[in-house]
Image 1 (tube, rainbow, N blue to C red):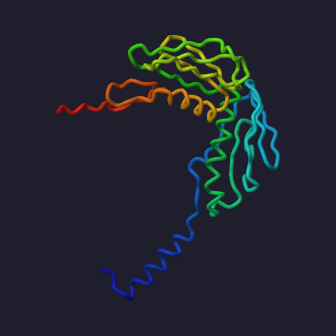
Image 2 (image 1 turned 135 degrees about the vertical axis):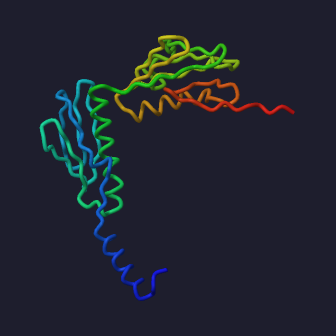
Image 3 (image 1 turned 120 degrees about the vertical axis):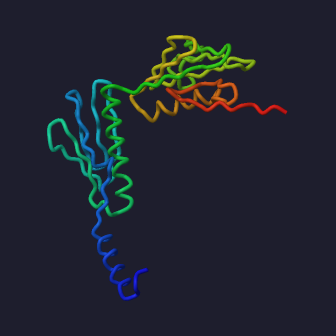
Length: 213
C-alpha cells in the first residue's frame, strides 16, 4: 500500500519515463539484404524494383525514407515513429519491399494437395482461350461433386500438376499467389470429420470425432 504522499511522486516518475520511450518497429528496423542482380529506381511516391523475373513497383508514403548504408543493404525508416500512422506503415512498407525483392529474384511458390477418394486434378487447354482473362490454361478438378470444377489460370500465375493430387502454383507477387491459392481451396475447403479437401502447403486440421446417438 503506497501512502498518498508518495503516490503522486510515483505517478510523476512513471509519466516521465513513459514519455521518454520511443517506438521502434521490430520488422521495419530490420535491414534488407540485397542480391547482386537487383536494382531500384526510387521516386517520391514509389520504389521500382527490377530483377531477372521482371519489374514491380512498391507505393511509398511521403514520410517513408529509403537509404542504402551499404551496397548490398537497404534500410527503411519513417520521419516520426511516434505518429501512429507512420509507425503502422513502417513495418508494412518494409515487408512489401522485401517481398518485391524476393518476387523479382526467386519468385514465390505454393503447393496444394487434393485429399479425398477420387479427388484429382489436371492441367488442360482452356477452350475459351484468353477471353475470360486467363492465360489459355485451366485446372480441371474432380472434387466429389456431380460435375467437374474448372478454374482458369490467370496470366500472372504459373501452374503445374506433377501428380493428380498435387498442384504447384508460382508467381512473382506473393499477394496475388495467395489469392489464387485461396480461390482454388474454396472449391473444396478441408472438412474436420473425414479430413477431405484441398490443403494449401503444410496446412493441417484437427479431425473431430462423430458423436454416436
